[in-house]
Length: 373
Image 1: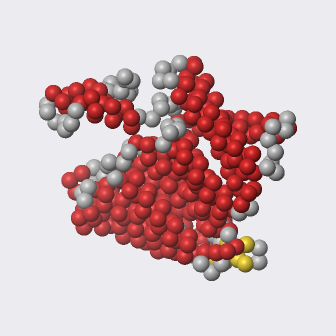
Image 2: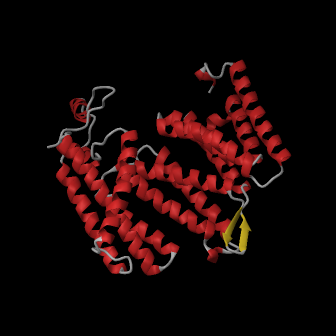
Image 3: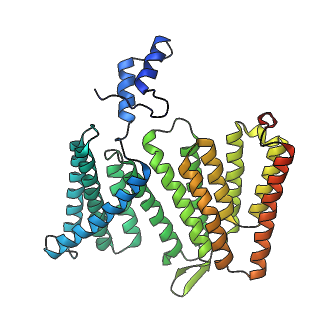
């Protein structure tokens, strides 16, 4: 049986912890069944995040080159939708097989087969989506194709970067259709706000619920980055629609939803929503409401990411929040469809509010005295 993963920071493994729990009679059920369950929840051992990102970029480029090669040698035809879908399913099956061949031993063979598998999976999904998209001649058809192939592979292809990219592609495709589908005239803003609300709700459940399966972690990040992408597009573009049918989507309601999400997150981090009644939390809530009233959703979302990253010890969320904040300020200042004077006033007020909050926290010693919370 495969050994259970050992934590590199503590030196403990799930197997040793399980043995201690069994010795103290703190487990329910058969220990062997518990061990098999833990192993089943493990994802394939992977490289560090930055290497996975580089491999992902390389796999995408390699898949495009190989697809171009297949087209040049006339093994595939872009005018034959059924053939594209079939080739897509074939490459997807090959990718799953290669992942199984890679095995569990960390060596050059495993690394080679995992990367080869990832390239095959990228090719398979690209061809499948391309075939369905050409057949349906619809942007929503492309979205459905991405959703179908993601549902097929999510549980059997246990590579987190693939799960994240596929899930994010589904959400980003839906959001793109909401922004620019010509059939959503007059209801675009309603559909956008409903979809954003659902994303915030699902992301909150995935990130804050303690019993979420490890396999759903990439999905939670997909929702986070989909929300970021939606806010960026909303801040960068003031008009949406198709050709001559241009509509405005107000940022007021998304800003309010993000403010409410941030307040709820603060209550969750504090351990109880009743803690929001404490003086530090009341002041923090007041600051969040003011920022929300100023309609700068990027700032609110950045703070939300920083709070979540700090509470969950997730460096990805923290770094994303740090990078997202200045970018949102730049985009807001240069692209929001209001006067320069209005932009300047909003930015100055936001900065003053944040500085005042920091001064108050330091002056009262709330950043050092945990019991005040």
